Image (cartoon, rainbow over all chains, first blue to last red; front, side, top):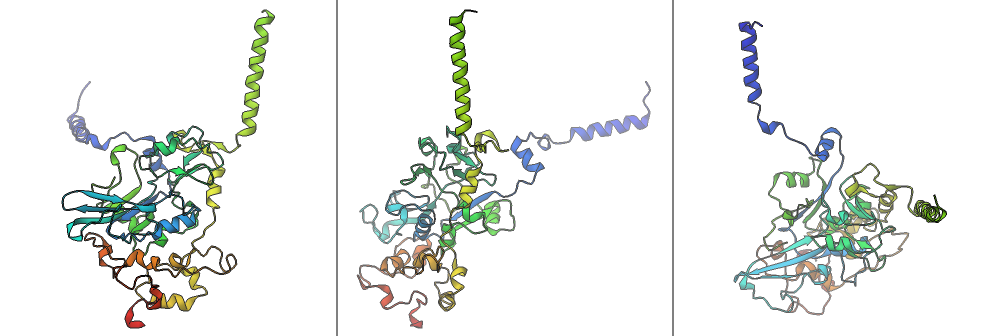
Length: 256
Length: 156
């Protein structure tokens, strides 16, 4: 076998080029990532909460309950607003009377008067279902009554749920509850019936301050999507690996 | 094989067949993975349609503007323009068919949701016009002095 000068130089150069390809360029994709790269996976609903804008009026909770037929006088709700008051001694005072459905009109928390001069920071945090990418509530359902739709929303089949309550226990965010009338597991649906008709969720429409936004993560023309992708947002209980899809602006370490 | 071995076997087979028949009757035809993954997508496909057909109650401000345009205009010109009509008037549902009239809640508690003063430095709440509910005309309805569609006192 003879080697010409031309082929020697060519092979040497090609070998050198091949070794310089960084290993990071060749990574293993999960099946889901491969599918997303190959097909157009469509819509992925997500939510953005701006805790700086929320004033604790509770109109969102009221609208959610009326839209989704949750009794007003029963202490269960699909979404709620929490109040956090951190005093100068470092103590945090947290409450959510009736889920905040009647708003916050008093300075006292659980009957405890708080001196306005003593407050270091105070804010409101709306909570709702995180519509996780890895929903633990769906994994534990023994009968297939709860599931994730193609566009990322976790729903409950009311005709199929046996009311065992496993999912209520499995949710790390405590967003599931037992529906007092239907006697099945109940949760925030991102107002799926409104989203599929091109409307916003009832809570988003009811918020006068723009503290709540619902958006499609794949629609990069949506300002809320841009905020989620480019701003400093946080999610709740990231360490659980549930991949929550409700993003918060201005989250405090007291909020869990 | 002996009869006493076969008879329980036939019984067991009949039991399994019965179970499969009952299962086929009870489980809906559209129940299954439906092209999704088994962990998160195992469900009855018709359930999604059930949720999609859930009735809408809150119709939005433009729906109200279709008839009540004068109220809509006065509200949109005021500082209350970001508040949806249905926050105070209740969900429109299929108004004017059902219900024919919406109950108007004129209670003080609606105003206090935003305007009861709370000394919260890091929240937008402290930037809103605020009153002390116990000192500012207690037990009187706000609408006796303030027009919720045009809340500014200069416009009164």
